[in-house]
Image (cartoon, rainbow, N blue to C red; front, side):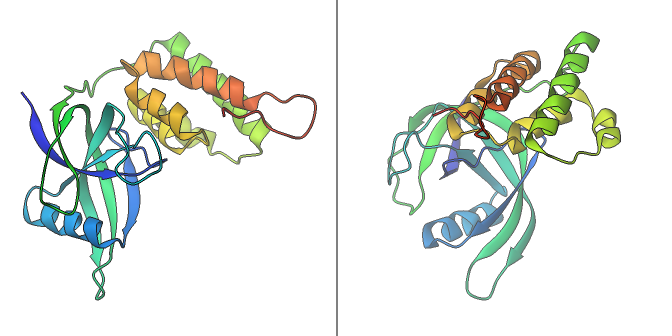
Length: 203
């Protein structure tokens, strides 16, 4: 089964299932996108373009979001919170007359009850603590420990300071365990230094 989705292609803005993404909508075509979504199903599909240029090809995986909180301004702009529902795989882009792009996509059947093993969870938390210390982040670890596995891994995937390609790889990970393993590898990579004060990044 495929579904027609209205998309918001934005480099660096990656939404994960179960997570929230705040958006400020000001361009006329995306104001039209939000207005259309509000009168239909309140859904917007987030997906990254492969290049930050107009009409660039899209990556193959994105995430459908549902508009939660929304503030409509007098000048037509919106502030809203998009809540991740499920990932989708791009089938093809559609030829449309709307100002915003639309695609045909297959929706992933997400397993909301997927969990990590104790070893996977423990290894991830140890690496996350080391990464936060190296980066100088202040983290409420008591709150982190109370998160379920899905919220923890998807949440860190969404907010971690990785480049867009790394975020895309996390989104495309086959399952939660694979995403967790990739996150650990990325934290180790980004946390390395070459003896100077510069942090290694993926370019």
